[in-house]
Length: 159
Image (cartoon, rainbow, N blue to C red):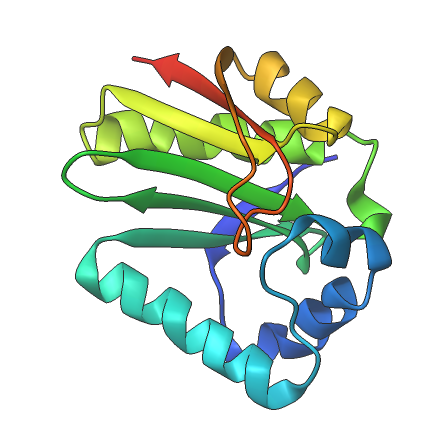
């Protein structure tokens, strides 16, 4: 299945809200969008990130429909990849292809030399995506409530 990455758009609101209704997504994400106003605000944050060159957020599409999200959050010191996939996109390699694509884009377009990918320690699917994309387990991160209630893994990939 072919994927396409592009910046999020306002007409993606229905797919964005549908994805955020998924209990598994709510379990792993720190942000859960419950209504159109929250989704519009989230889209505004993504657009502002592009404008400030600190958050490069892509909708992941199959057959012209958003089924996931992949982002590079970059500061002067750190760059991190994050992602999620909607239920209908899981188990098809879509997350790994999106992460691999944005990793190459970030290394060459943003001239980065190191990217990290952080996920909850018990999120085995995200661990497999990180490993499949060449991100090596670098450290285990202890919980830091209230923002991060569970332990996490930090995977790193170097250019």
